[in-house]
Structure formats: structure tokens, C-alpha cells
Length: 251
Ligand SMILES: [Zn+2]
Ligand SMILES: [Zn+2]
Image (cartoon, rainbow, N blue to C red; front, side, top):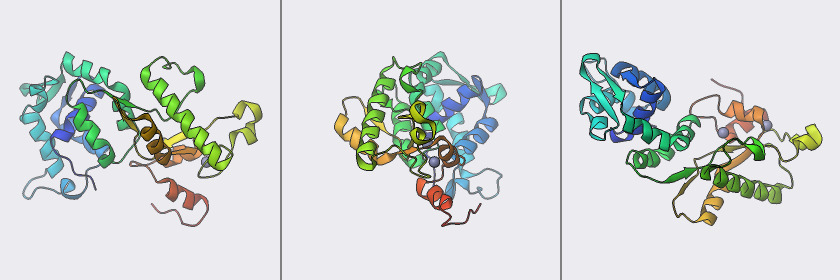
């Protein structure tokens, strides 16, 4: 169930506005937010006597209350009934780009990302996230703090999985890269994030790693694609049951 408050829509709106190239009409903003956030429950209901849902009304309010204008993030252009990003809005997105991309692209449940979206709508919030897929040790962004922390976390998770299972195999289908590809597959696996992993400035590293181990799962590239084929993603358990033929695939 996902229902949204107006303030929770600030950051996703800014993100969509930027994706649209810096200007977006209110009607298009509604469609893109609906597509990405999948409002359900009361948000999906049509307001009686109108063609609007409660969700689209919230987006209209966000625009007409000039909420993003007041934060300096965007400017309402009345003649075109749309929002235009400001330099401040753009730099706010750039400063938090890795985090926002991580939250928007991994199809996490809204409940899990909501606190961060609210926190990030305020300026000067320090928050690091951990990437899902690594390009090995020579990743192009390895110089960034986020990458270093992500890598430390991934290494800790892999060590734990190795200690627990003795091998680094897909948790869905048991595919093992070293077994199939020999030396060039050694140590390769993708890490699926069941829930987003955050590290706030000054947060306890040990706790973060424990939390991460619970919320991360090694999967092969094939199973990972299937897990992310829907939004929100299928659960690991569901895909495993399908894979093992316990449950018939239903749409
Ligand atoms: Zn697999
Ligand atoms: Zn994943």
C-alpha cells in the first residue's frame, strides 16, 4: 500500500522535473510520478465528481502551493502550467545524485525510502548509500566516498556469505560463477538489496554492516534481472519458489 503526502513528493518531483529536461507540465508530472511511485489505496481513488485521483490532486496542490518555489528548487510557470528547475534545484539533485538514483532505480518499497526522501528535501543532509552492482575493483567511480563505503560493505557481506555458505552462489538458482567460468568468474556475484541500506553521517559502521547482511542477497545476473522485472520488484522468496516449480507463475 502506498499513499503519499505532499511533502514526500517534493524530491521525486524534482527528480522527474530534471529527467524531463528541466521543465515539466503539471499533467506530465502527474503521469511520471504515478508511473514511478505506483500510488494505491486512497491515493488511487477518483475524487467524486472529478476525473482526478487523490494522488493527482496532491501533485496539483504541490505545484499550486508553490512548495518547490518556496524551497528555491523550482519555479512555477503559470502560462505553461508547469515547473521549471532552478540552478539551486539542479545543484541539490547533483549533490545527492547517487542516493536519489539508488532510491528511484531499485524499486524499493515506498515505506523504506520515504524517510530519506523527506530528509533529502531539506538542504545539507549528509547521507551515503550503497550501490547494487559493482564493476569490480576498477570501477570508474571508485574515488568517491560512497564507492569506498559501498565496497567495504559489499566485501563484508561477501565474507559473511562465504563464511556461512562456503561459496558465493546465487541465492535463487545456486549458479556459481567460478564453477562455470573458472578463474575469470572467481568472486563475481551481484548483490540484490532487499531493502535500501543507508549510512548516516556518524552512524555505527558495525550496525550498518549487520543490517546490510540481512538486507543483501547474492544473486546471479539472470535472477537479478527477473527480480527487477516488476516494480516493486518480486521478492527473492517468490522468484525462488517459481524457480523451484513450487508455485505456478501468475500474472
Ligand atoms: Zn540465479
Ligand atoms: Zn536488486
